[in-house]
Length: 306
Image 1: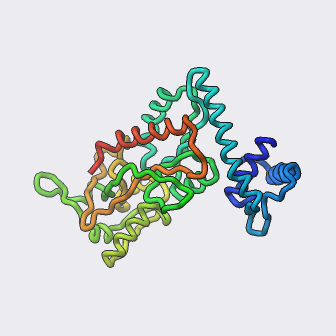
Image 2: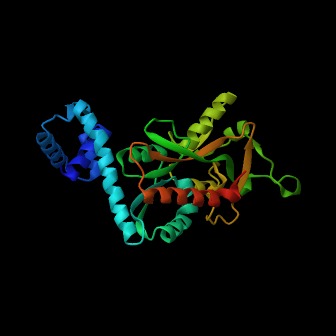
Image 3: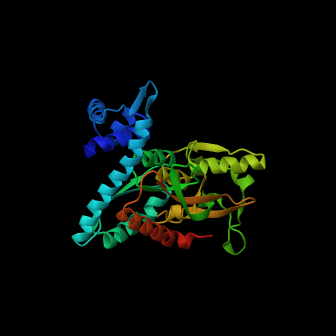
């Protein structure tokens, strides 16, 4: 049995589509179909039921899928153990980061990874939650940091931190309170300000909409912008206000042009979660990388904890 054919079959069976599997594997779809057909001929079994909506495993295919995942994992483990025999863990680890957090942790995470796993390869990808969920399912990402992900049986989730969102405003529009301390803002009042928010289904946008709906009010959206730097630049120039985690401003030189205020009544709280596919066992390198990621994230956001 050819390992490449087995890998191709597992990916098609997991994604339910030859098209999506070809994209994930970076191979031409006719070549992918041909290799799986050769595997079916060798095993004298139809492994996939092909239809207009995609492909689903047959009973024989389900059995091979179960064994195939284990075989491919054992191959990865064997490669790692050979790396250990040479003196270090090896392999590739791909991690997805949300834009609001990547600026804060990219450098310390890379430094920690190189120090702990010098023979391994790190790939960092910045993206929004829905895109990263698809990448986890397709196997393009080994793990990702997501905000408020939906529960799913094929995803293993670890809650890292619960954080309050804050109102980020241009300094010129924020009066100073007693002792130059700026008072917190009621969420209802913040909702009436011209807001610059990411488009749906951004996790922060959905959270704010849910909270204001419970209050019986609506968000006043001045602009929809899907780019962190662009949002903060527009706020700095006075085009509106943003609602993001406080650490969003880390490592950004805004020259004091931005002011951060807490939100209250209620305080919108977001959950930062480490997510990986439960369908694929983790290699030792991935386990070490996951522990490093948790450690780096918690250390980086500690100064901004509420």
